[in-house]
Image (cartoon, helix red, strand yellow):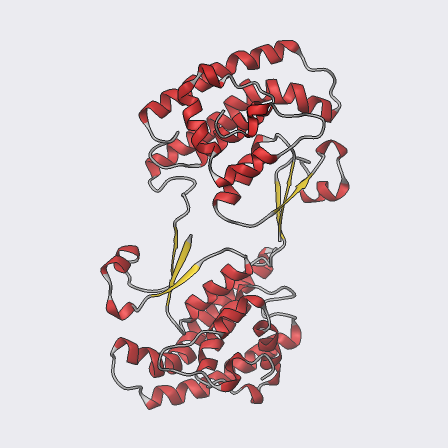
Length: 202
Length: 202
């Protein structure tokens, strides 16, 4: 939850409150008596001034530039490499081609996708043996990008989870997050998901 | 409300959906069959691709650079000039000084604040005669910044609204927005607001 440390009658705080409400972004108010110069507040803002907005939601790009670079590297890995090697070959051929009226799926592409997915699942397992989440100790956009791709392939039943326990353990954790549930409830017209798709214990 | 134009099984769309939910930002989903190449959708994104997120909330800084510059100019006007000439002299002297333990209010400062506020109310009326909102035809951060300052001075009963009908008409419009209500419900310990403060028809 976001917390806005504020003070009554501070126009700067009031401006931020109006903006958050106009944008329908949830937050809680906490009065900070700045003259008390509380240590935990000074740790948030050494200037000792309000407003201070603390966002306890996971930062998408990590807090430190080094980790942030790793997040970006892995987001590109999944949005480019995985997309080209797996998603396009499976979801693209089997589903999108039909929607787009681009003809029959090519079996050579599907074979390539089914083969390529193993290397990516191995890579996820490799990372997860060394870190809690893909890019480090905190969940990040890297996990969301990877899970977004895998979830579309999983909808077709084309992720060989049982041969990749390490990757599966990571996906179980992502899958159980409330933010992931609406994706598991998706139903694509004319394409039914396999039984395990929405199952948290698959 | 935000609308996310998406397509089933698009990993790019799924990534954005997860992120919006992780950040607890509200949105509605709308399926966009990109192969239909709908004109209204192409107007949103000439590439004809999803995801497209449309935020119908008022943009804080206007859509065009020229108006955006005017928003910034007026935000600076209120956060610097109005703050120094009015807010500091009234709210600063009468309330903040006591909280901060900085001694008695200086009556010369209060006299200056009470005098200066007239020029700013005149300026607001001048702008509002020419535009719907302070920086142009759309509400913007300029209105929120100005209203945030004026609301703190109004809490002390120091805004001579009845001598400035033009500014008052604008403030009535701001005051009736849902985002403004929590500010009108604020009660500062030891400082009661005047009767008209929370009144929408003052």
